[in-house]
Image 1: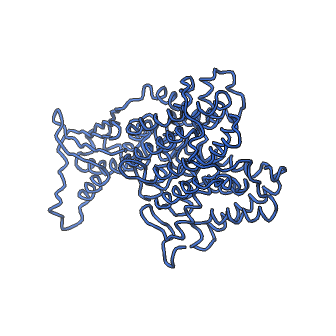
Image 2 (image 1 turned 120 degrees about the vertical axis):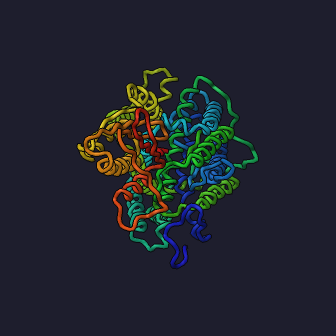
Image 3 (image 1 turned 90 degrees about the horizontal axis):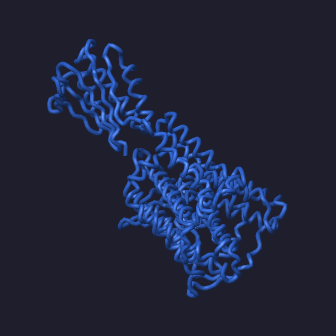
Length: 559
């Protein structure tokens, strides 16, 4: 536990005391354990025997450990360097189950390897991809992940299990566990709040044992990793479109997780750190490629891990490294995977429900950071509805050819596909340069209202739009004083992403530049306005223009 007077929040580069470090790592590992069921489901779909299931579990723990270590490493261009665990993702799960049923685990492994390599190849180009996948779409993907985890958590709590077919005791355990987690996180002792999820899971497991609702061990026996991977990859290129779309959805989700982690770490966050995102996407692809080599389905960064770090306040990357080491260590212990699956469903559901709330909130925040015009509103709404359609209306896409149908198995992938197709269509006719005219006699509000429309169409971040508005307001005050009410100001707005450039031109005397070496003896409103104008822009130039005009060029960094 943290010593008396220790901070309630452990930041990225801080190392918590060993007891807290180990407990937080176990908390992360315990929450990620639910995804061990995904490769087991794929193995069962392929008709795997007991020995093969055992091998899948052991290799799955090793893959999760290595993927987590790579993601948290953050050195030499590999990994984001944030506390983000690697897990088996639901993005690939529906397609992997169908492929396993039709042609076996080898094809799943081979196409998973291809998906991972694709993500690795795309990692250097994430900056360009962001132009096609703007922040609001990343926020939508994060929101869908939160909703998926929330729905999964309700199913785990409400539906029966082999140990409790009716589900009555399981619901009691789930609700009690959730109440305990919330109580500890909000009203618990300061030293216990960072470990509220782990403490709640331990308390819920104890309650399940007391009520006789603990699950029985699956009919799987542990094996040694020395026996080699469960299957060797094979390649069925007819499956390529579905897995490529899954890789792109995983890439976008990984970007969203890293951006959420960056925002949580820096209260003054304004723009993504592209270097961290590139390394994180590369590590994410390496994890998926490694899983394919091990005969396993696809992996991805864990949004729940980010949500847990935000909820607990323990964001130290060392915790992620410790969690990865725990998984690697467990992989070499026969039957360890079986025991990890013995956590009661209701307990896992309660922990996921708590974490999903923070993920959903993060998605909403990311979406609303941008000004939304009708184009972006339609894009978000249609992508969300179509993305959820397959899950809400079973069999909706059953008549499509399998290669096309494979694109609809994941809500995340389907929503992303719709956004990628619809986005360019909605941008048809969208001008990247707008010319306006303003007369100082019209007043400041008229200038601000005229500039707001193109900012909305371009989806400029609210923080940037606020800076633009502040800069124009200061310029308008100067213009009314130095240009006069009878003149006209010509405003040209250019969106040359990542730079937003405003050029203001007028006939008459130039605005005298600021001389910081000669401060006035008394308050000077003109000087204050120039100082504020320079402060609100990333670059400002006063220069003579064509035809005897004077120009002020204001630049704002949108990245």
